Image (tube, helix red, strand yellow):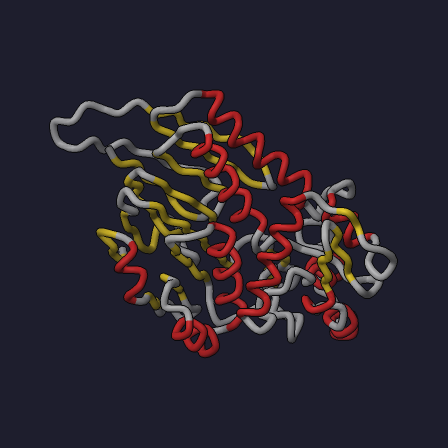
Length: 329
C-alpha cells in the first residue's frame, strides 16, 4: 500500500494505492493544527492513543519553542538577553545545541539568533506589512550572532540585550523527529509525521509531491520506499510581507538582513534527523546558489531539489539514490 501527499502544502491530499491483489492495510490518519500549521500523523498497526501521544509531543514543543508565545522558554531566553541565563528544559537545550551545530557547519548561514531581524523589525506573521528601513536592518543584524548564544549545563543565555531567538528554521523539523520517536517507543513501526514542509517517513512507502513554488500543484514527485527518510522544504512563498508589490519573505540572509533571492524553494532529503533536514533546507536557501553548491560538495549525505527564480531546476545524485521513482512533472 502506498499513500501520497504534497510537501509544503497546508491542506493535504491523500490517496490509497494498494498493490495489485493486496487487501488494504489498516491505518489511522489524523490532522490537527499545531505550530501555526497543520500537523499530520499517519500510522499503520497503531491506535488513536498512539496518534494522540504524537500530537501531544508536538503541542508540548510548541509551548516551549514558540516565539509567538510570551510564556515559552524560547521567549524567556530572548527576554533575558544580556541580563541572565535561563534554566531550560532538555528539549530546548537539545534543539539549541543542534541549531548551533548547523550554524557552525554553515558558517552562520543558519543562525538561531536571527530573531532580532525576523521578530524585531520585519515582524513576520505579526501584522503591519511593513518593510523596515536600512538603518533598522543594520542595527538589528548587528544583534545576530550565533556565537553569542551560550549553553552551559541546563541554562541558555544570549549575551547582548536585544538579541532574540527564532527557531523557525529548525523547530518544526525537531518536533517531527520527536513525534516519530514517541510513536516508535510505543511500538509503531510504519507511518509518517508531517508539519507543513517537514516530513518524516518510516517503514512505509509514501509518494511525495514537491510543491511548485511558482504555481499550483506539484513540480516533482518521488517515492520514499520503506526505509526512513527526513524531508524538508524551505520556500519564499510563505510568511511574506508585500506592501509595494515586491515580496519580502522570512528566509533572511543574516549577513545582509535581506531575503535570499537565489531560490524559490529548496527541498532537502536525509536518511537521518528531521531537525537537521529542516535546518539544512533553510541554510541552503539562504546561502544562495554558488555557496550552497560548494557546501553540498562537503556534505554528500544531503539530497537536494531546488527551484530557481528563472524556472531552472537543480537536483543531485544523492537525492536519486535516496528515493525511488523520482520525476520532474
